[in-house]
Length: 63
Image (cartoon, rainbow, N blue to C red; front, side, top):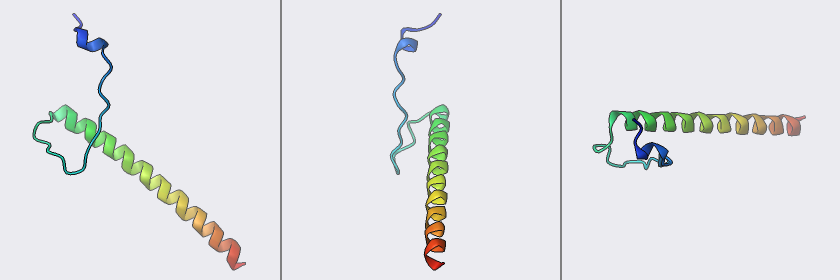
């Protein structure tokens, strides 16, 4: 039987760098790892785009 908690929206997972992890469950830690991994991938994508843009501009102005 489902509990009443199942109908409530889940609290958005957030992470603060350096926060105390001792009160988090293994599931919560894994959720944080997934969240942070996705953020690292997003940041790496932004770096790649910025490098490509910079290289294109440098190539254009060297001609």
